[in-house]
Length: 105
Image (tube, rainbow, N blue to C red; front, side, top):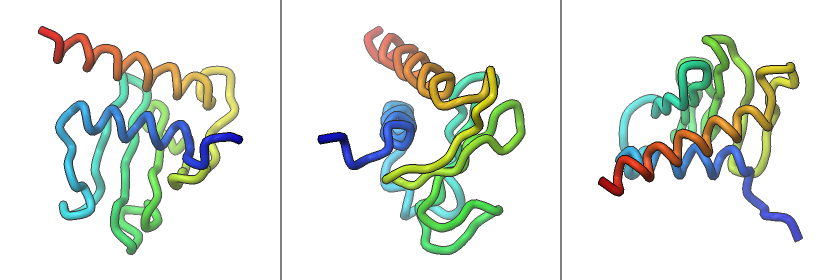
C-alpha cells in the first residue's frame, strides 16, 4: 500500500519544521519556504485563497515561475528537464540534509 500523503508535501513540511515553523495555520498569510536558489514553496494553511494560492494548498515555484500545486494528498508539478518532481524532491532532501548538519553543531 502506498503512503496516502504526497511526498513533496511531507518533505516541504519537514524542511519548514526543521527551520522552526510551528502551527502555520495560526499565522497570517502564506508560509514561505525557500528550498534552494531555484525552488521555493508557499504554503497556504488557511481555507481562503491567498495571493493566488488556493486554500489548504502549497504552490511551488522554479526560478520564480509557477511549477507546481499540491495538497497533502497529491498535486501536479512541471515535467521539464530541470524542473520536475525528481529534481524538486532531490532539492528538498538536500536542503533537509543541510538543516540536519546545521542542527548537529
